[in-house]
Length: 300
Length: 89
Image 1 (cartoon, rainbow over the protein chains, first blue to last red):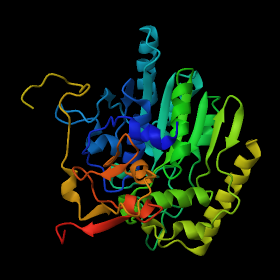
Image 2 (cartoon, each protein chain N blue to C red; image 1 turned 120 degrees about the horizontal axis):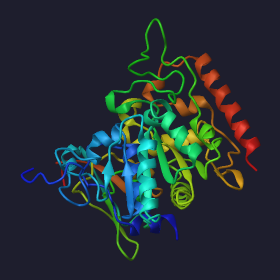
Image 3 (cartoon, rainbow over the protein chains, first blue to last red; image 1 turned 30 degrees about the vertical axis):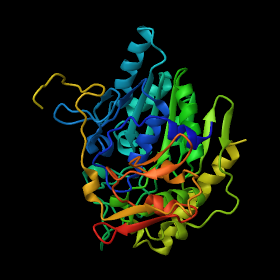
Image 4 (cartoon, rainbow over the protein chains, first blue to last red; image 1 turned 60 degrees about the horizontal axis):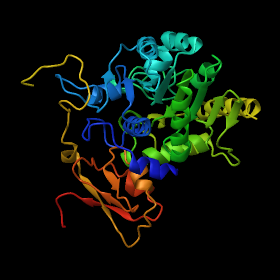
């Protein structure tokens, strides 16, 4: 079935009006994941934009048509481990156990529980929407923030010029836990994204599946909301966010990038990068090129 | 709010629904003469405000559309225009 048909014919599991910003990448990721997963699912959403936007519900109300839990920022994977184990024991392995966490709850605070659950190969699908920072509380830096980004904890001024460190590349780290399935996806490449959700859900019945999704944030990154998809596309085209997947056959590159665009072109029009120096761009380009060469070599 | 039955919300009970249509400054308007019914706008809409019928036709619903303009920017045929809200019909 074509991905357009899948999205058109599946029911929306999310409340029609949630308080995510205009053009929010996270909202698109949430709705797409739950459209594909369907009604027979349970989701855990730790504190972050998607929890804050009313999806977990406030004042005894609910934001989803399926059961939703709000674990702590650092225990999403261990919380869902218990849930998953309970469903296996009750004889209902058909239920999709899903986590939808931001990069803060995945790469920083929640990393210990995530790493432990991945190593135990617990049966769940862990989706990380990576908007490169703690957007819900006003864009503090996280470990996946790109170097040179203007955030509220790494401002642009006379002492420092944005974030000083390079970003941590989490998906490769998780894939090294010998999980059942691990992939990166971008909302701009929707066919690939939908196929990866389906594969991830299938793999989550056998073991741990991890999906790292690029999620541009108009409010934090300071760009016009309608550019969200084109920025996600440029991130893939510039090799900042290469699309690959890992299953039990090995690593596969999903988007062979013959003519990558430069980092200079990627940062164009994104407000958080507006005072990057040429040295900063060169150092990001260097890391991006190295990473892409590494991924090319491990993919068959 | 009157009946506080659950501590953890479950299922379809008591949906939290915000009037996000009131945020809209520009409304997307589809030009059906240019539209080729590819469904890209439906796939990219973060709010799921663009729906498809059974015979693969697409239309915009304005009940919750936030007016972000992603559909207009991503339409391969440029068949969606952003029109100022409250102006001329």
